[in-house]
Image (cartoon, rainbow, N blue to C red; front, side, top):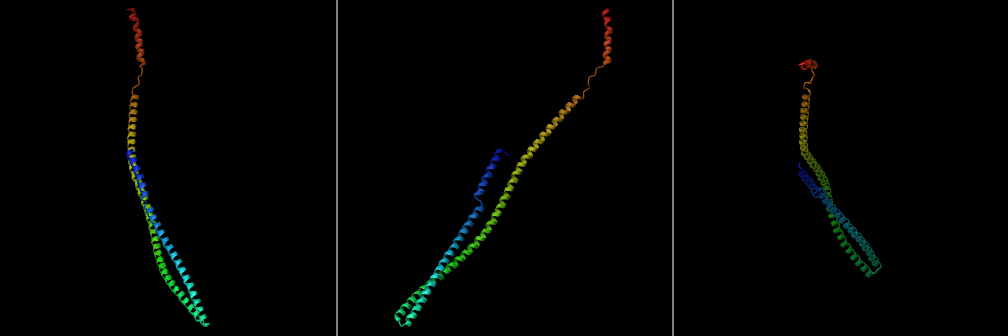
Length: 224
C-alpha cells in the first residue's frame, strides 16, 4: 500500500469516526427518552395541580355545608321563638349557601373527572416511557455490538492488507538471502579451488647434479 493510500485510509477513518459521532443513535435515543421523561413529569405535575384544586373545592364545599347547617339551626331557633322574620332570613341564607355548595360539588365532580383522565394519561405515558427505555437499552447494546464487530472487521481487513505487504517484504528478503548465500558459496568454492593446486617442490638432487656438472666443465673451458 502506497503512502498516499495509507494517508487517505487514515483520513477516511477519521472522517467516518466523526460522522459516527454525529449520527450516534444512542444520543438520538437518549434525547427522545429525555423528552418522554419530561412529558411524563408534566403529566404527573398536572395531576398534582388538579388534585390540589379538587381538594380545595372539597374543603370549600364542606365549609358551605357547615354554614348551611348553622343557618338551618338559626331558622329553627327563630321559629321556635316565634320570630318568623328571623327564621325566614335564616332559611333564605341556608338556601343560598346550599345552592353555592351544590354548584361547588358539581365543580368538584368535573375536576375529579379531569384528574382521573390525567392520571390515566400519565399512566399510559409512564408505560410508554418504560417500554422505550427498555428498547433504548437493547438498541444501544446492539449498536455497540455492531460497532465492535465492524471495528474488528476493519482491523482484520487492514491486517490482511498489511500482511500481504509483509509477505512481499519477507519474500524479497528471502530472495536476497538466498542470493547472498549462493554468492558466498561460489566465492568459497573459488577459494577452495585456488588452494588445491600442486605446490612447487625443488628437486634438490637434480640441482646438485647440474651444479657439479657445471663445476667439472669450468676448468676444461678455461684450458681450451
